Image (cartoon, rainbow, N blue to C red; front, side, top):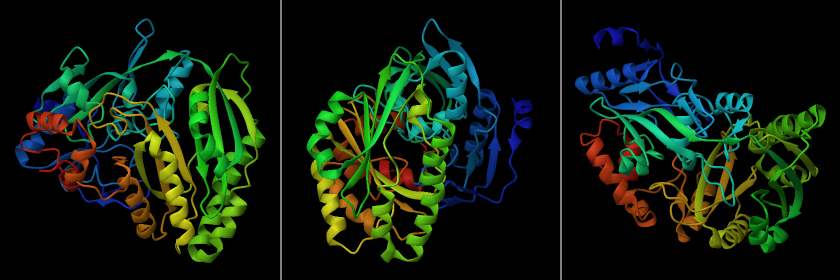
Length: 443
């Protein structure tokens, strides 16, 4: 085993920071193992040395869930597909595999995930550990598509977990926020590749509110963006299609997805940050910039979009029946306050699932996400939004900014105690803890 340690790559770095730049850490050591065996050995050695251990993905979380001053494990060398079983409808991948690589590999074999979020830069372990989700009437988060996983625990043991093997750990570890160990590989359920037709169009806020339940019920995947300081929304409805494929044109796609949604939006956000009084006027222009369009393509090309403008985000999951009320309250709060909000509010839905710390655990859910351009003072807006969400029993996204603690979270997650009991069993000495986990899970 000592020979294995010598092959582990030690990353020379003065520190680590996340994608948004709001979280930094100075670990005592950063390592990049290339196998489950190497990963287990570095975990054992860290425990012997008294170093706390955290694994990090690509840094797309806004919370300090992966921050540590101990041992930081990078996923760079644990990537790639390990097994693809077409008959079983599964794919097994190393934990550090980026979602982009997974989706491109699946597409090359005529397969697809059933649902996913809107970016592909995350690693599979990072995306699932924090509860990354898309939007869906019947299809749930990425973590809900997990059929099995491999977990390295605090004593260096390697556990296989599924509905049949270590089922109580599996029930918790699909969304483990780094508290139970280090996930080394994941097996996802997959489907034969299919087509989705996306229909994007502007719609007034009041109409979206009036028709919200109908829009959710009639579409496999419905989401919308509301632009604060306006009564305007952009809606997106994705539904399975028999084809033929009709992808977004190269030029029109560049104009909408790169020039307008990233390039010009970046300039608008920069102007708004420098001169906040311009934001309401810019919002009115931005909300009308994207025209209606319809296209048909394979799933990951419909679900995902490029995100090049950096921002901070807070997202809450509320009972779906509370979504319209909460959104109207948020709109009223923005209108009567001096807040200047340059980013649209994103709204998605998910069916109930059975994962202990899933934000959709046990209830039909609507997600309300608020954002602000990086470098813009965010506390007042996020605090106002958070107060609305917690009044409706909201559950914060594990990877996005929030102020909730274990006392609150244990009251909105019926299976919270089930998760912490598994944690007590697997990591009694809290090898994998940090300040964030102490706040949200307790000691």
